[in-house]
Image (cartoon, rainbow, N blue to C red; front, top):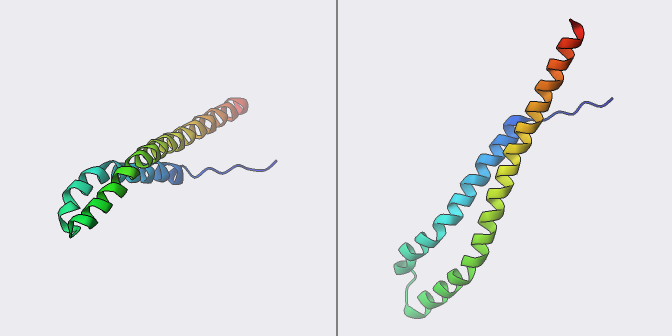
Amino acid sequence: MANLRVDYSVLHGTRLSLAAIAEEFEQLHQRRNDEARIWGGAQIRHQMNEFASNWDRHREDLTNHLQKLGTHCGAIADTFRSVDEALASARGHERT
């Protein structure tokens, strides 16, 4: 029988990384407004604003997907840990 090894720290680390990326995406809208003054002339500001506005919809979708994926990574780690503990407990009861 093959052994399944689950690295809980990698799964939880992935969850935290995805949460950090999602938070950065959520803050992009505010940064766009803050940085508009450095974009130069009116035509450049207009084009950058248009791009940023078009990106808002995609950013929101991507942020939601990142958050869900992070939640799933945490749930996978928690589920594997619970199953592992239950199996270890069952093996302990078999020996007594």
